[in-house]
Image 1 (cartoon, rainbow, N blue to C red):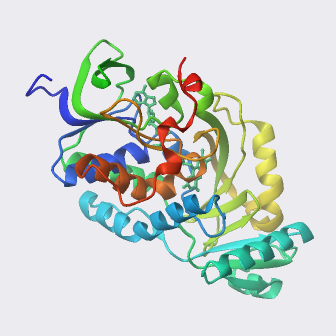
Image 2 (image 1 turned 180 degrees about the vertical axis):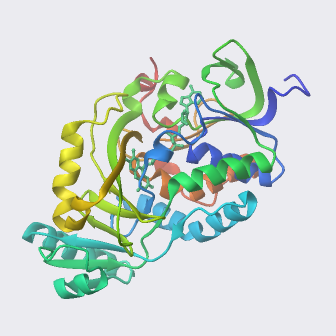
Length: 377
Ligand SMILES: Cc1cc2nc3c(=O)[nH]c(=O)nc-3n(C[C@H](O)[C@H](O)[C@H](O)COP(=O)(O)OP(=O)(O)OC[C@H]3O[C@@H](n4cnc5c(N)ncnc54)[C@H](O)[C@@H]3O)c2cc1C
């Protein structure tokens, strides 16, 4: 490996979303020389487009080993965000005020009862609420709501602010962040990656490589696209007259408070390749469902709408750890939970690099779990 060039580092991370930058920051704080390559502006894809909910209890993620990982990551969040705020000098809008699930019909009421039973059984404290109790906590919600379930341990973060702060924290701690630098190919010799070539022809060298390019990771490694499946989600932003005190969700539709009297309303779940269009159908479906429980937003000023691509996988679980190539680590496929899972992913990957082991069980996420045939182009 050539020494002393700006294209040479201890660890080269491909992808500057929340996953790549969280890993980079953690390694840099431990004294590792890290470079992050991003095809565009770091933090401008799924990690920017997301709603920022940190909701492992209400979302009831499966299987149990994955639920444990999500809950562990939620527990790491207060410290993670405090450290990023200190390192960057910027606030990230981490809020621990809890989240509210609401039911508008009998089917949703049964879902809330089931979540309450299951999660109380796992030791979480959830508060079932009558319609009157829901409306006394958030009078701007609809009287059509039949009941609610308040989840004190589901939090949220302003992921757009977090991303900005994370990139600043990375740069301040010495990470070389290369924007507009698209990785094209790994050059491998005897089960070892030697370097990565980028568009324009330059080469980047490192001892260890981390693939964290979200739903584009399959393209970079040469896997068939079907292993990383883009799942588009559309989002709308409005200016409101009165702050919402917490996230409110009914099924897959939600309203998420943001600073300065703004709310996000989402979302859709669309499998249409790498297409990120905002569509009339998508926006109509968001409005149809969210205005039923948050009708006052109907009179509010529309600010903007966007779409992002969640990196889904065939079993909907992330891909973490070493594969068949000895110095290449995967940190991708976080699907709907990448904001939530950033601190624990950074911990796992940095432990693998610094100590050679992680104390978290990651067998379920091993990159080699998919057949060799489906991993080859
Ligand atoms: C609408 C929506 C709502 C969501 N809500 C939530 C939520 O509430 N809570 C939650 O936990 N998660 C949520 N998610 C999921 C979350 O956003 C993702 O799981 C997470 O952002 C994935 O992070 P990432 O860093 O892997 O990917 P990304 O943020 O997509 O970053 C990948 C990066 O890789 C770069 N890249 C691509 N190709 C190359 C290349 N060849 N060379 C170099 N760089 C490359 C891209 O430019 C990009 O910056 C949501 C997602 C969407 C779309």
